[in-house]
Amino acid sequence: MNRPQSLHANKPLAALLLIVAAYALPSLGVAQENDEYRAAYECAMESLKDEYPGGPAAFCVGNSRDPSATEEKAYADAEKAFLASSKSSDACPFAYAVWVGNGSRADGFLEGPQRVDTLSEILDYFGRPMAFFDQNGQQLSNEVVSKWFVKKDQYEYALSDFAKQSCSPNKIGR
Image 1: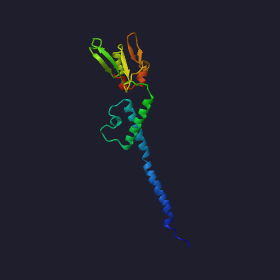
Image 2: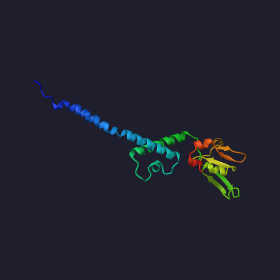
Image 3: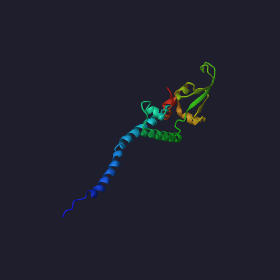
Image 4: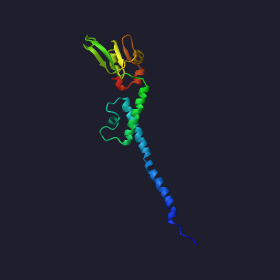
């Protein structure tokens, strides 16, 4: 005699299907989340390289909306990676330079210590004694500074290709 199959026999199979579905549904958004993370990370790295003063969230999202949790994680990861790479890389440690004006016409009638914040501005005052400093206020050696400038002719200097490639647009100026 044939016994009707119990509905209870299929319960483990149904439970297994429900568990698999519960894990599968969130994973459908992973590709979108990875794209969102990747885009936010790249944008944050760009803002950090350009030294945007408002930070990655302001640069990438602005005031249009609050960044998502994925974007915030990407911004934090990008900042960590950028800080780690900038500590290990000294390609362009320039922060500012100082020269002393004596009040003459050649100095534009400026007197006393004058701060210059871009490498392009330095070219305007290049013949004067000048001290170069990094972000921490430590003076840079002539060996480091000499990589950033090349002599065009007897009296003129220009930014080297090394400076153009290794320094951010904010540090180069103009």
